[in-house]
Length: 64
Image (cartoon, rainbow, N blue to C red; front, side, top):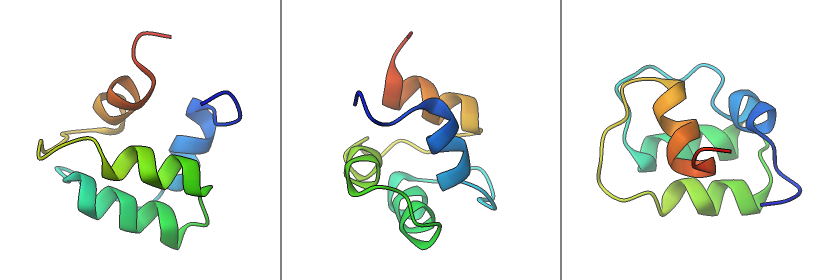
């Protein structure tokens, strides 16, 4: 994900109410105009519910 940064993720998830599952997060990202690469990555995070943006960032980017 060289072209996508944690800041892009924060912008993509603007307005999300937590907890949220990947389906809800991916929809919000698409609605906020996120790059396709990022929305695909979010949609493949599994069935876990995320409690906050930090959890999503860790799942998407690991421990960068």
